[in-house]
Length: 215
Ligand SMILES: [Zn+2]
Image (cartoon, rainbow, N blue to C red; front, side, top):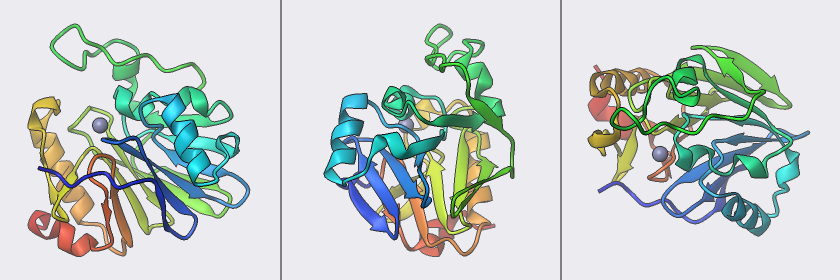
């Protein structure tokens, strides 16, 4: 059993976890605007949780998606001022070319205007530098993001179980072997102050969380 998603809260300086119960999104205050990582499940929940923390959703100018599953994209319509980014490798998932489950259940197409990212690409927004890391396995275009080389948004590539990185819920992974490689890729990072997951909270003990995945 993975760790629980905590309540919405400011979890570091200018950095927020927004809880949707079983899934979370994260928000970074870049000074002149807000940057979101995923959009949670429902627009109404997003608006209510932003209000609790005194965050203005119209200040969100950029949304980086870890992948296209609906529990991560469902709140997008509440962030109408934002540019959306996702991995180039996720395109088949949002254009109904590759099914998510079985052969006939597809992820929802995204509204036009999104930008795609490749491995290691960087975007500077206000006081934030966002670096993308391809971490496929859960979906073909699953992506993790580093904020200022310190805050790591892992996406669904791993979850925490008593603070340790685990590969749970194997059933909904599209490629388990890729996912293991992606977790090892994460484990090679250093200098991470917070490791953030979408379904199991976050930890400040990155080395402890990744110990079993080091080669
Ligand atoms: Zn998910």
